[in-house]
Image (cartoon, rainbow, N blue to C red):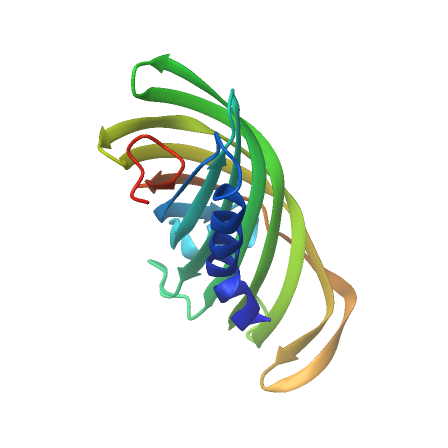
Length: 212
């Protein structure tokens, strides 16, 4: 599953470029993205105190008019805590969302939208009872986003974006002190998050300043 998640953005970009070559008026851009991602679960806040880092790739398909379609794949990790706690957390996140985009000034746009998000990750660390717990799982939810984008030079733009994601996770299985165990009642976690993202998309196809 991890290999599929990692290759998903590249496969999608190849598919979209094929479609764009046959359709006029559609612009495709892609670029690196980095953010400070803060999970909203209370146990994360108590143990890690500070946001983690996520990095990935954003792909945009801009149709004529105000509609835009964005797909993002990113990897989030946090492996140290100011409190000295021994835990770490990591996850792959994929979000898909339609957006409404509006040009306020020449070369300056604002946007907002909502869509779905998929999360696949793992968590390990010592719990409140002194047991070392390891958990893996997946979940799906929805995300909201808004922000602004400015054209910097030629095909290169800069984007600042805020996202708020909502997702839950429940499991009755975990590895505790190295042994696979059943958990009753089932453990629940809030996989929602908030993040400020910086992206530098490059126009690839379909635009006046596109690379191809």
